[in-house]
Length: 131
Picture (tube, rainbow, N blue to C red):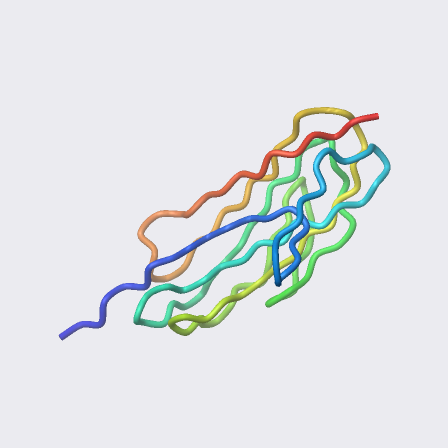
């Protein structure tokens, strides 16, 4: 009998306090903000080769990335090294820091893929940058 596939809860947060979430929105142009991506395996089987890609808009400038695996930025995207495995009921977290460089109603799009997912999982976080 084959183990059931993992079920996912995928969330992208703007500045997260792990006891309780706090949000900093809107963001003043010139300020640096941290987006926290939390992936929770709610299934009963491990998942493997979990990849996270974050798309940045022209209104934001990449500052840094880190977390469960290292990340690097190129061509408007932050790509994290694949997480080899995530056990059932386990969580993995990544952070992307960006600087607000232009006013606007902006979006930060995050995409997750893995060996066990048949389609990418996408989440978009809306934030307002103001002057």
